[in-house]
Length: 347
Image (tube, rainbow, N blue to C red; front, side, top):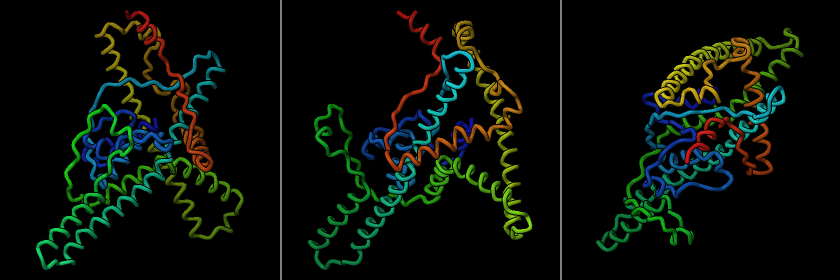
């Protein structure tokens, strides 16, 4: 639910940085300009990775349009019954969290692309300034300078397409090369927003837990009389900020509960109109409440779940990145009983 909230938080009117989650579409002209999708191990977070690739290729001037479409989503689960199945489901959820946090590789990718973008604009600016400083005396010299400037500007602002053999032998038709145009200025606010979103996704889970643990240990071991007044006020203020954040998350869960019930009611009505309501209810069913075990107590204990399925897999991912950038990608099981039965009945 916290991942869903992070994704939905950018989908508001006027949002200029809207990172896609799994499902998105791109114009083929843009795909051609940026050189297609990356397939190296660092591109495991494919949706975010492709967004960043297009974002920095356009200097932050990437326009996103939200297309609302009906979708059904299921959490990871286990077919094992009883308490063993419960822990098997927790293990599957941890595996999914590790796959999510493995995408923190895109933080380094973002830093590299930022330097490339700045260097590209610097070289383009120098090319235009050279035309003004050279001031040729003859027409032939002016033409040669103009050709050099145009070639330099185009090579520094446009992404070079594939140059491999597969590119020339591919049966897929290629679009015409885009015209050489002056690059748009860097959208600094959008770039800062992207860095802030990446901090929320890749750093904040670990950051929160580290701050909580270290501040708790410090206040437990160090007497209050030994703590400097200013530092003690800072610790007190931070603790109140955490309480306010916890209360805000409770409000979010309450709103998400209402949103969930609305979506389930609409899907039930769709299944009823399609004549599949009885079958879906019999095999998979509908869950109207997102908190099925302990209600409000379950809501209040969300920091425990955030630590187990957010901070710990994030820490495991960043430590593992010191050794390898490859992850054995095994998709966790999701409920498909009704779908399998429906496919078996289809000729």
